[in-house]
Image 1 (cartoon, rainbow, N blue to C red):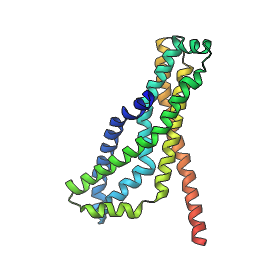
Image 2: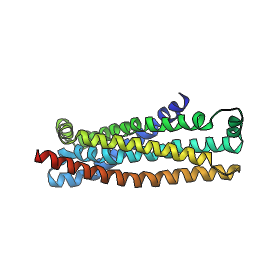
Image 3: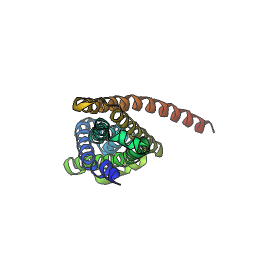
Image 4: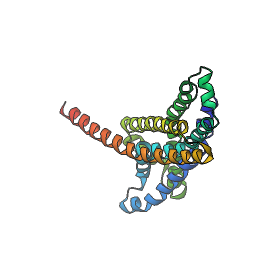
Length: 226
């Protein structure tokens, strides 16, 4: 439960702030182009189509890697340096089961919830810009979102967030478990944990997006044939 609180509750404010201001920036930047083309009422579609399958999981993953991944690496690295992990082994306790598994599961399970929060507050921020600042009717904003977004997009974003959370938890625990001795070793392990997690998120996002895009086209083609 302390790990769930650390990963979930204490990371949520950062996710809310990130999602809100990303939604504000996307809405402000896209309004002029959409207004010039006469599609300003469809601003919500652009925001949600960008946030749910792509930006939401990546932003939540980056915040999770920076806020939680570094802390987990530092915690386990300090335990390694001070030989607390060796003491657990001597007492007959499996350090992987005791220390790694709960942290890994906490990251993997809470990443989708954090991503969902990022998506929701990003969409609400876009609604604020569209309706309050730009005087776009509220009903079309939500209508076009409900009409255009598919369950497939939500599923892709959910699966990405699960994979990102698992990757962050694994990398953070691995770097903490195998850090070098001394304060310098712990600090370097934290830096490497975040950098590797960030690169893995981007690479994994590309391959998952490519795979599901091809799968969607294949399934859509089979559906049209039937």
